[in-house]
Image: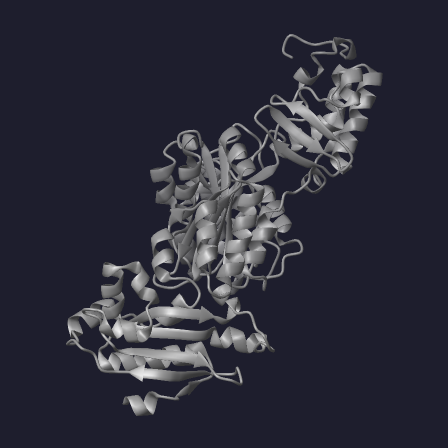
Length: 544
């Protein structure tokens, strides 16, 4: 195709031109790059602008593509040379005149080739072309230069990196600009947040996002003994959500790491744990137990990254998988199947486990037994009760993971964009939302057991206000600040005193202390909260 055929050729989208241009460059073995461009998204229109859907498709009002040689020669000599008029560029020593110019037509509904020079003043090298040419590069560069995304991929990024990428964004292609705005909002509200991005190589497409807020990092540092890692099914149509949970002093599961990844992305346990340890390195030898969902089978990763941790599989999830597989393979539809599977999982001795497996063998199809022996018997030490590691603390792993998944899916639309998912994940949940399942009566009963009736009743009332109130809480270098939309109150770092009139007049724990302790994971029942008012105590045993 010569210059006369190309001149005036029209395209109804930037993608259409990009596909054409890639094929044309492959045929001619010539390397071109963008010299100057005017994105439609940054244009100010004197008259009516193009329709939004047309602007999204066309992307540019003007763009000049030049031979790679002129780009290299002008950059080496003087950066200002890039702004020279085209006739001046022709005169530049070593410059190549080959170029192509596209402009938006008068009707503002298509791109037209208005200038086309195909003759190079140097020989074309097939080896160089094969090394540098990549299909689809124009489409990627229409949003954000791939040299930026390739460089930043798999690295932790800060607010300056996010704002630099936003500055370089030309369009909202692939939702990247919206996602970067969401991450910029995260850093604005929480400068101490940790964030790692992974882009698809040579494409401006976000593949994985790892994020950890300041509160998550604090929780992980203070409660590292038991971690839980699983995938939240049905979270999003395009992205899987993986979460790391810890358990605070009130036995509540708390998020200490999020990872959003395109569906089908492998090795997510390794990626998430590596990112978590890079963010909170001092927990490496403190984690004693990590419970994994049944879909997570990278067990050797835990031994490598958390050398002191024992691995458990969520027993209830294992039972659900086995029951479903048994039904699929023709198990009898009677009430014996689930109980015998439970006996296998809950066996408290090797003898009991062996008998349960023998009973299962006599009841269930041989195809199922073959599946069981190949996939689940080898890892039985991670889920059968008498073998599996029993931590000294009482935690129902299945219930904890189940409650977390329910919380993550409340109000979530699976078709939300990545940007919307991020904004929903990092929103600060108030104690009112965090303590729906908190056993308030148990905490109140413990205070009643050691306090005089009047003091215990006041504490119980404040505990109720803490649970049903809504507060904005933030940490400072001196302690914590709590805002209840009317006043702001200050608390010390140990969360034992508060500036409110309730505490200063009674020296008893107030709603603000309870609310902040809930937020930070500190125990609600704590005798140290009563030390300044010993008159409130009936007795304090030596153990207390």
